[in-house]
Length: 73
View 1 (cartoon, rainbow, N blue to C red):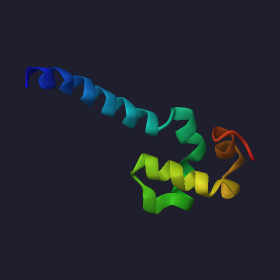
View 2 (view 1 turned 90 degrees about the horizontal axis):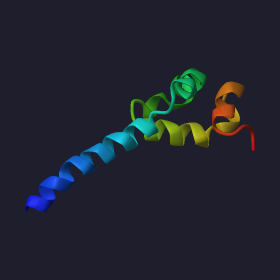
View 3 (view 1 turned 180 degrees about the horizontal axis):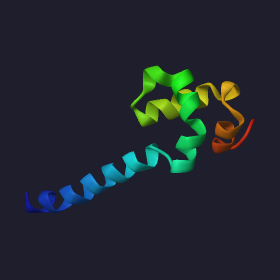
């Protein structure tokens, strides 16, 4: 029981870190915000779902947003 209590803060920290990564950098959000609203409004505010949606619509993204996903491929 005591060991579980010691692991709980580490688990909470890990989950918070993962959520922060999913939300992207300020630059990524700025580049893709309009595309997100235009193409993926139904996925908002779930950052992971928005990213999946943007990847699925990669050909329709603005040039700036495409560059955030590694350019056109």
